[in-house]
Length: 147
Image 1 (cartoon, helix red, strand yellow):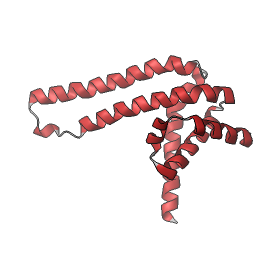
Image 2 (tube, rainbow, N blue to C red):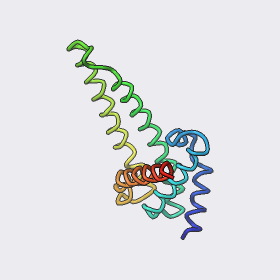
Image 3 (cartoon, rainbow, N blue to C red):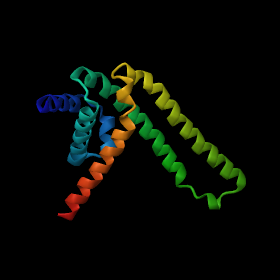
């Protein structure tokens, strides 16, 4: 099983889009985190090599688009509502809600695409897996800093 995961990771890393590298940062550290991410998701979802080959390109495309929307939302959040008029606050609120609606629409549009690659029961696990990975990554970083 470990050999299969290593092979899958190698294939996925060689075919993953540049955009996914942006998610984890540039350089060697980003590549290591990306490799851990791919291995973790592949293992947690119990993806076969066929499923992986279909899943990762679709998922990476989704993540890139979602990341862009989240960036937009963070840029908006940098504004200080206390310095705004009522009309500006209304506009600001509507802009944030529009981005939130775009994120939901993106998720809805990618769900059927992801279902062509893996079962719905695996897709529904993704948010939980993402949270678990972040927790483990933070713990790993904290342990390394403690040494």
